[in-house]
Length: 368
Ligand code: GTP
Ligand code: MG
Image (tube, rainbow, N blue to C red; front, top):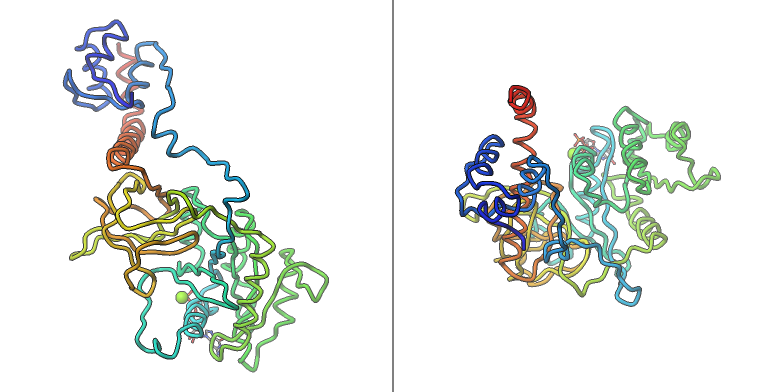
């Protein structure tokens, strides 16, 4: 049972339906006697009447249950990398150069990046880059409990050094327990000094390998492309140590990278698949919304039919626009997807109401 009508709930509580309806009104809900109430509402109402509710596991709970994957089902997945750093230190230039270096001759000039993430290949291995500007998006996602990044590239301009946002980025990456690779950028500039950067970073316990520490620091130039090959190699090296794995043979789960309402196409969301494989036609819950995947595009804007672990994809077919950092999960059928989305909407509604009405509710009960 995922829901219960007002009438049945009243019966179970040994109350009149009108009493339950009155309580619901106080909580900001207009309900009829036959209205189905979700579990959260039932729990709140029951509590109001001094009763407790025992919840049995449902299809929904099963959907969200953490799956203990047996090792034989796990396969290596590409690392997901975020680039952080102080303003103007070259984050965008570096992302552009990395992408450029991976564009084949036939594509050159013909490809413009489509979504806020892309993949490159180095030595036949893929790397996913999130194009989120700086650490703001990173922080926003973490605040929502979304851990998407496997490796943080911290860009420090060799002609400028460690700056406030560099320090902030270090703190964020450390709090998230994400390994940091330092890209000492702008090495082409005559006044660049990599040793000075290494020196400054020791203050934050980031000691370069040459100096006996364990932080990888790669001198690069986003202008000339020097050092970028080494940087990609180092990313793969770190990811190998991390043993990043996922089971591709199950319903996809992951995180929303960005989303917007497109005039012609409706809600459009960029998703990062974290495990499983997503397919055209899948039903999914995304945050508090849901839908069925009508079309799926890769970062080059090409139509694709499936997307596996660590792949960034743009999807069409959601009924509403989700938020960056929302989770998504593929459900076996439409009914379940809709049910979960509806329940989550109710939950959010409750949270809004209880925070908004906190004082007035207390006042009401004080007067009773
Ligand atoms: P914000 O997004 O504003 O935080 O900046 P950003 O970190 O993305 O820096 P961006 O890539 O926009 O680069 C800032 C400036 O530095 C631009 O004028 C770039 O052309 C220049 N720049 C970036 N990388 C290099 C480099 O390796 N060498 C040189 N000489 N200039 C660079
Ligand atoms: Mg930028």
